[in-house]
Length: 108
Image (cartoon, rainbow, N blue to C red):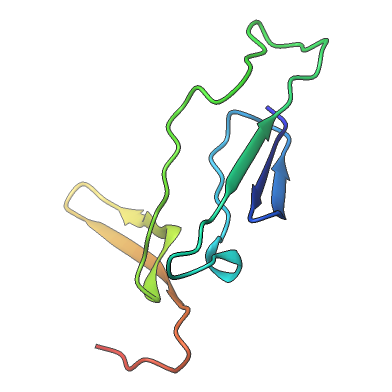
């Protein structure tokens, strides 16, 4: 609940609600080579809290995801069934692709 995240002194954002997933893009703020990177997280509990358990600190999984410059966005695949009958169904899949490389990439 009410977390702030920094990388190398740059504030990446605030998340006021602790029960939803979130992510931040670290790449523009990273130091490469033998240089040290510092990731800092502050979780601040505000009282009074209306939840039965207000929680404090980080108590769920935290993952550092490394991707290629061209990759599927997190939560980037959306599947629907716009038409369903007793004999079959139409399935629609939408996928969001990020190209973070310096040049256009050709389609496969």
